[in-house]
Length: 391
Image (cartoon, rainbow, N blue to C red; front, side, top):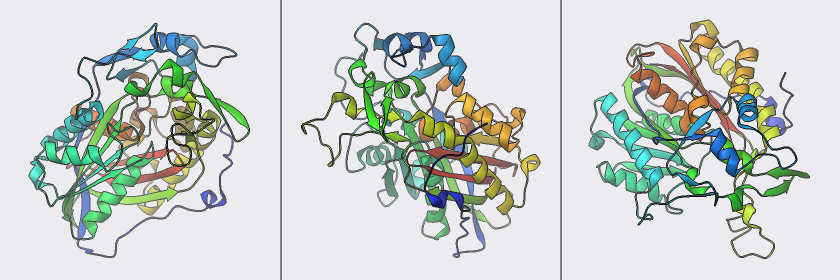
């Protein structure tokens, strides 16, 4: 049974549902979804050869799969196993980079599913903590340009982790309910393979008095992008976002000690491994299932539904063992809980949109049906939330 997570006091309060006071004769629906993952399959065996896991007791591929349920993940770049570094193609370095290309493919599919042209969009929200280019929202601006959106269509890039999907979905929904925008795309991207190197990800940091090794990031995460299209619909539409709740706290579960103004490159005492993302595994394990259950229970109650009313559940794909804990304590039916973490690893904020897009492709759910589904996620700095969506 998961232990209660030691988080700031506000976590124990109830989540807030947001019902905009604007045009009450209007709702917001998801009308398109798309996903993109790169073709290269990176196995546990290869990764553990480069990033062997805990120094005191290195893992075998079988042990890692047993602990996490992850068998493989997709990478945009192959690796030089001996050097422990990604292999970049000749001339690599021009925009768009791999994150931008995955985002573009996911967005184009979502537009196709929605039956829209890019010029129909009034806004674009892009969430990513591993962009191709740092600063100025460059990835989102380039994506806006490449797909051919109108110059007056709003564009926003958000530095967000695994919980970013539910927040970006909420912000896009609120844009539409304000009455200013009618069609907004949300794209979430995760691109870890170019960042991995043995020099960075076999180090460690001392955080909260404990040593945290960086290898978990190298082993848990995979590359991918997911996108959804949100549109204004009439109040009597069968398809709509029924209930939403999002919570922000400051309780770090993933840290990157160096790279910003506080600890810039070249500052004395900065180790190379300080530039790696460090997953604080115990905090993630303690927080995932109880927090996700709390939010799912809240949005279901707000929508006057229960578990049995929901056609499909889309939980953030942290690792399979945590998803199984959630299914156990929240009573989520196995046959109605979408899972792909064994094939893709943790694709951060993209994971829930990839799940939805794949279900639509495989005709497990149908847009326009009005069938209720739940999207729920939790991520870095303890951002979490959930939505009840009638497809």
